[in-house]
Length: 427
Image (cartoon, rainbow, N blue to C red; front, side, top):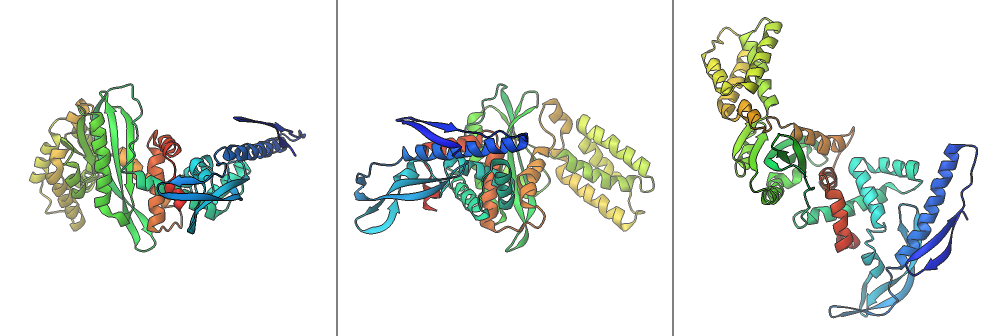
């Protein structure tokens, strides 16, 4: 056998390995991987035994549990399957059994914690079949699609339950945070029960005095839970961040959806319509200003964009110019576009103080939120042919927001290591 235990001590195990060398480096490396996996299985089995009891009765509350003896169990590890004899307990009345080893070693279903961490992280990035291929091709580990899905679902169940209870530390930032920008947006995904529905995405970004974004917290929710549940989670995160940076300026950046602003106004001291959305309406307006010349139309848009970004009060000036424009001679489509632009600027010109915001080093675009819609939702949930049930979609989104918010994935697993994984065990 290429790997064998040659010495056991109380807190260590010594393993001897033998690696065949061939004239093919790729073949040799495959052999190294396989041998290291075999050593990993041996070491993991020995490590798991450290969490077992000696078989003595256990008193938990008013209930006495006694061992049924040691029974073999196969555990899935990053290196292979490890079979371990461990004590299984039951009360005198029979019923459910209890395995102290699985509780204390933080076993998730049948996976060791590191393997569960690997699988759930990979599943957050791609479907189960892709995770299976990756594990086999890159780690010499063969598992089933169902095992990947079940393990990731168990991890996600704890993520979801603990979202409101576990607080995560914001990474230590060298620069002082002077502004907190909050953004909201919705993006469509396909839900089996209802067809295309809107998932919500939120971002809470921390900016320094130079206007550089230093950290972003991501929040997302599937359609089933509705906007109210999403808003509750956003509120939880916002209040936590405000507590960390009570002196920071609170600002909201979003598109023109009134639902977004109804929520944002509860927390922000100023409002900003995303600059890109505003310029979209300028393109519509340009058709009325220069209906026959594409070149003149683009030059007019470029000039307005520059002034809108750099001249204080230009949004109001532009609105007044629009109100004086004569569009009766335009075709129906151009008139419709003009009136849409006029309405938009009438409703939102007060939220277009881009020059003032640039001077104060505040963001003028919701690019981080738009990117989050793509990164958190679209890239994973809207792959070709993807159809989601609510529970599965909620699980994946919970994993992705935790993975993509810097520092939280490692903190989550530190908390699992400290507090345990009772929900996953029960599942």
